[in-house]
View (cartoon, rainbow, N blue to C red):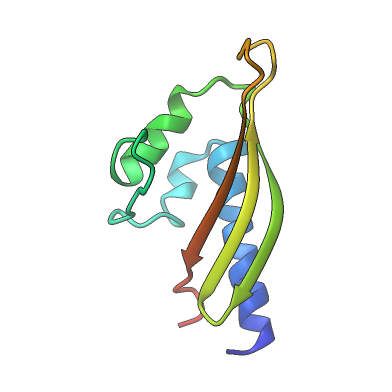
Length: 107
């Protein structure tokens, strides 16, 4: 795969996370998450609806910040941080996520 496709795939993943987690534009986010999305976290409801419902129920202070993102062929490996303000979570929880994605955008 060309370097330009890998850059495009990384841009898609970054836009998808920003659209869902920061903008909370669920209609636009549906373009990025398949209805057949598989949720691997046991504490989140299955599928795309489970992920979207998690964000809908989260405090408005919840924010996502991009971290390291790597792409090779169709695969994207993505490290990010999701956090909420101390006012919302007394324990000051900080969630660090590592996602792997497979982009179909370059096909």
